[in-house]
Image (cartoon, rainbow, N blue to C red; front, side, top):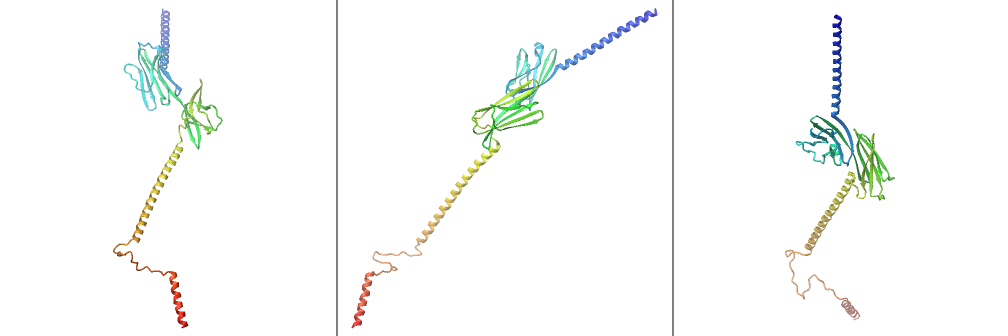
Length: 333
């Protein structure tokens, strides 16, 4: 009898221990599943795009959510110096006002960014809420920018290609390929790379345009970006030193002309004053006033007192001969 009670107790203890172990295993599995679900609710990604292209950002797999259970979808966007949002809800408005909009397609609701630029870089967060739960997709958007411009230095044209990219340093080259002098420079600023290529063009180059090609390498492959530079339109950007030199020459020439005209005007005034003074002095010497010299009334037959009459030469000779003859006659007598 005692042995049967002992056997019964042992069986009951075994059953209790087995159930406790089963519940512990179930709780462990339940906690693991919850942890995996939480990890799936928030997704972080980073994407890089080429400036000037249309971009579409997906907000997870919204097709798995029934539209009747959907509460809202909202994109919170943090850009450089400003924030905005847009979403699908009666109480949500589009505060971005820069061309971004939501598209409702068969693949779900996506964010469309037309002709993405460096100003669109930032943090994009999509929040989806429905009756069964919610999830978020966080996307860090980077934009690779490529620009070209034409400068002038020492009567030479310089074609400049500049690339700004994240994480990877691009390689730059020109098309068509030209066998002219060029140089490259690269600067790393944090996670950004700034690469500049300068191509020196002589005056005899007669092509109308050049294309700068940037090649970005990544794990998924290489991506190219193009920017066309038109040479027939003249320099797009003149160096400040050249502008200052041109302005200085222009201002100096204008000042020189104005000073020359002013000096000519002053000299002419001086000469006019001197000539007027000279004429006044001469008139004062020639003409006398009535107080200094009384006027003389002369008739036509009256000769001036200070004028001496000159004897003609023939009469003078005749008079001398007569005197000589008279003296001779007196001597002979």
